[in-house]
Amino acid sequence: MNLLIHGYGAMGQIVEEVARTQNLNVAAIVSPAGGEHPVSLQDVEAEVDVVIDFSNPALLDDVLAFGKAKQIPLVIATTGFSEAELAKIEAASQEIPIFQSYNTSYGIALLKQLLDQLVPLTLGYDIEVIEAHHRKKVDAPSGTAELLARAIEAKRDVTPVYDRTPRREARAADELGMHSVRGGTIFGEHTVLFAGDDEMLELKHTALSKRVFANGALAAAATILDRPAGLYNLTNLYEEATHVTHKRL
Ligand SMILES: NC(=O)C1=CN([C@@H]2O[C@H](COP(=O)(O)OP(=O)(O)OC[C@H]3O[C@@H](n4cnc5c(N)ncnc54)[C@H](OP(=O)(O)O)[C@@H]3O)[C@@H](O)[C@H]2O)C=CC1
Ligand SMILES: O=C(O)C1=N[C@H](C(=O)O)C[C@H](O)C1
Image 1 (cartoon, rainbow, N blue to C red):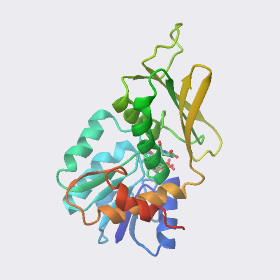
Image 2 (image 1 turned 90 degrees about the horizontal axis):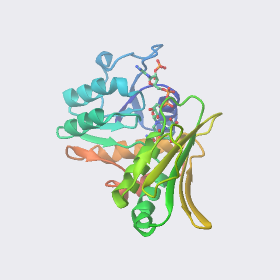
Image 3 (image 1 turned 90 degrees about the vertical axis):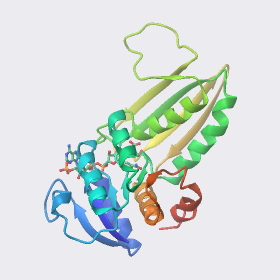
Image 4 (image 1 turned 180 degrees about the vertical axis):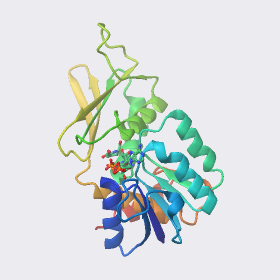
């Protein structure tokens, strides 16, 4: 697998490190910051089989154009896309295989499976999503919090509420509160809180390093390499992703 890493910030650098420990060939690195690497996908000359993107939504058009021109699969792990940008990803996936997920850890895939089963049983409980990340994170709420919100919305008639500041009124039953904490070096915590009368139930995922995301992205890359065009995520790659992401580093 000749890998191209697009975005060479905190995650791009960890993907490179993990790829090398797995003896994968990092054929090219594109770093908008420059340095020793090309700053743009247009400058890549190496033979590439798959792209792993941990960058910024501003670069989405470049990533999709590159994948389509080369007819190679993309792993898009960047967060913070608008609905229009997600629609562009879906449209491009008609031409090439694209794995897109706001969280590439296996634990979040498991959490989503749990929510699919649990949320229909929680009528009468108020649901809130609380996420915490490092001080450098620019998007809020996290992509994962949005992913979890979509999973909850699919199973219960709730509407996300991002800010209660301008209101002075009691919480409605159909609210889905979304909360972001930023500070320090927190790798990523996501809690789904079910608050009932005189009791609370919490489902919580904690990333203990950034390697968990790199490992999942590499597993996704290996898995979609030979897939037909289409849009993939950890749910529809569930079976295949299981054994790969559980491999010990
Ligand atoms: N799906 C998942 O499991 C995970 C997703 N992520 C997501 O991946 C993305 C990257 O995370 P991380 O590596 O921590 O972030 P960093 O800020 O450390 O790195 C981002 C990279 O994108 C480039 N970049 C940022 N903004 C722009 C811009 N406007 N135009 C051009 N280039 C830009 C940066 O270049 P420069 O250095 O020049 O600014 C850098 O190479 C984020 O969206 C994050 O939420 C992160 C972890 C897990
Ligand atoms: O920026 C991060 O660090 C992370 N971003 C992703 C998100 O927005 O959900 C995934 C993970 O939580 C780390």
